[in-house]
Length: 422
Image (cartoon, helix red, strand yellow):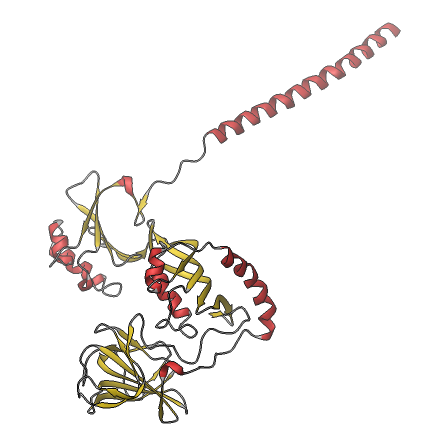
């Protein structure tokens, strides 16, 4: 009995390490299988999504790309794709609230999708309205019509340039989007006289550019800029206050003034303010209490400040089509020799700063297209180029510290942008 008990205890003692070994082997083996499964999963990542075009899987269709030709319209395009005229009429009716098909433009791209099993029949028609928006028409079944837009990708960029002739040329020479010239001219419209920029003036800018299908379509936003004009630095920082984006300098003062520096963009001054100028048409000396901006016919003209139109019509004294705007109790501006007036511009209408009011022309006593721009202070003519307009409100006191902290790294980044060698 004693020997039997000893034998049982011995078996139990020997069995414990064996069971522990078997358990550890199983854990190790299970872990190894799990790791192998993980490696197999990692070796085969998910398949990439199929290529898409206008929301359709490209591989599912036979795709034909075209451009709208001269004298083509929706009917002629779809008739050439063997779409029956009653269907074309229904599609045109369905699209009325989305896009007027009569506005299809020559040169714009359009695409026809065909199912691979029925190549003779066009299934979908897509017309590109502009760089981002497109019109989709189903050519059978329920005849769906809808408007959609391509995804826009934003890329942050920076650059610099030196003025040799103009801001536009400096930006092109620095291999940047020329549309930056328009954006910068609007930001600095109240602080930098772009009709007086000099050779050697330079700029640095941090901005976002928008892309569609790997093609640049415009400037999305300018975050910060530094413009050196006549030896003076002009900073501009985009900052949101009270739900409104605006531009401020390094001290938090607004770059927006009460008046624009000029009522139109990218032209030249052909005649300045004078009390005794030789008139090119009348051939006599007489006062010229304004500034002439030479520009092509049809160039947009903008109100330099908020105000009310007190006159709009024809000036019998030689000014041709003209507009007079009263901005406040002190200042009034006049825009003369206009080709015509912007849509909706009427006497008594209130206009905003930067709102288009007309177009450059040569009506009245004029030898060529130009804008005769005049400013009156308390009823007396003053030189428009000598007006010092006060700024609008600066950054609020409660936001000043946050603003200064926000612009500090932007200032450092601007200074580090290398100046291009134009």
